[in-house]
Image (cartoon, rainbow, N blue to C red; front, side, top):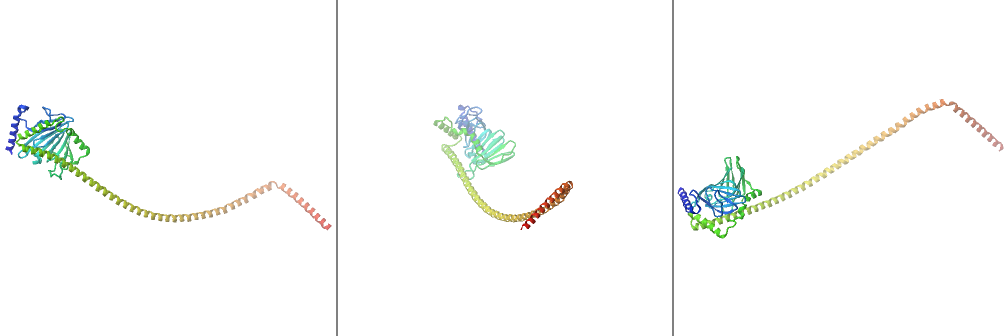
Length: 412
């Protein structure tokens, strides 16, 4: 293994020596990859990057606002740097003969999307990304991370466990000194902040996915370069072939590798689309099944409610009938009590009527004689005189009548 690594280093050293005249590079610089696509302004400490430029070890890549770049590494890994980002390739060791090696990159701010290549395919734990809050261990997959102030969000894109191409299931181990979280389901994410263990894996929401996609928006427009022509693209491919030749690959191997990469990318995209379509179908089926179950439950509930309603109505009718009977009985009782009350009132009135006139008569009898006595006492003389006169008149009349009768008898 050490011999292989020394051979690789010596090859890189020879390549760098051959290119000193053109690019004025120092012997310390080690080639890592090539800029495949670029959009906006992307720089390093010493230069502004363009499509086809080489990326070296320990170079810091700065992507400005609305900018981004895609770096193709020598082991066929792809690093996509989003806008407002700062990324450094700290370690890159690769043996093309055995696909052994190690990749360590650090993201100080912004966003980085990683599609793993041959190194992580051989050994899944050989690709790590360092962030201020901890580390991200890639295990043969595609993932994206966003580093902001005091927080890092990591999203696993795929592939899934049961992908149709038989690819290695993707996973990312997010961890620090306080704990670890494994992302092994596509489109699951976790957040990690300073002084805290990573949060639990959760399914990403639409708004969160928009946030991740927004960071890579600039590169959707750019393919290799906004103004790149066919000739420039051919030159870029030639430079890639030269770099691979310098590492010891032959023409046929280079062609097959490029074809394989293109096929793999297509297959991955197809697999991801299929997985998404299958998930959507499964969700729709589940939703339909749940709706049917819900309808059945609703129907059974309605039937149960109807039965309960009928039973309650019957009970209510019975209760009403019993209540009516009870009310009728109560009414009859009330009527009887009313009749008794009326009888009592009648008897009371009769008693009152009987009692009242007696009292009045007694009072009248007692009062009247007193008044008469008073009247007699006051005017006794006048009454006697009147009485005497009347008697005299009557006697005279009677005498006259007698005389008249006697005369009539005599005449006869």
